[in-house]
Length: 253
Image (tube, rainbow, N blue to C red):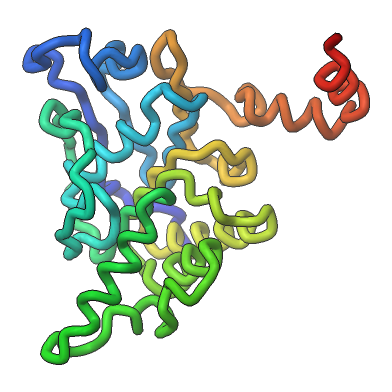
């Protein structure tokens, strides 16, 4: 069984620098955005990583909007706005697609998933709307589940074959065991022709075999390997020499 489609749904994204009005204003003043030319996507999984404040979520949001998703998340059909705060980066990006169109899709943002859950409940209150949307998430209100359970309900029930899935820090509400379960679910969907683009801090998720890891830094963006990321080396150092590391952290005076 092949692990990815011959033609990915999204091939690459590039910044149309000649149209940017000013590189002194957000989000174009972010070094990773300033120095970005083209970001090529892996046919099955691309991870975007880096420290906070470097623009991971901003870039991922722009990619999602260019792909046809609502800035706050949800499926391709979700069109709502709780608070219009997304950047204008998508207006200056060119997204190049593959030859095939995804049959499923979801943009999951940890910080706005509550808004998506609220929108589902609002739409399901319409007696003329037909089949309840929540049924495709497992049938139980997402607000009646923990944050992690509601995330996992989406992964398990709403995500389907041949889908485009853009995830912003999905590990935010997931235990390590659930992160491993997410890896397993990702693999199932990749074998069924899906493509993932994920912003994350989780070395567990980054460990997916063959994935492309793009690291943002003040010097720009570059491809790297799991073992070369600070996420991995810090966790490795912690578990291999925890007492010494904690001694230096907690006894600075």
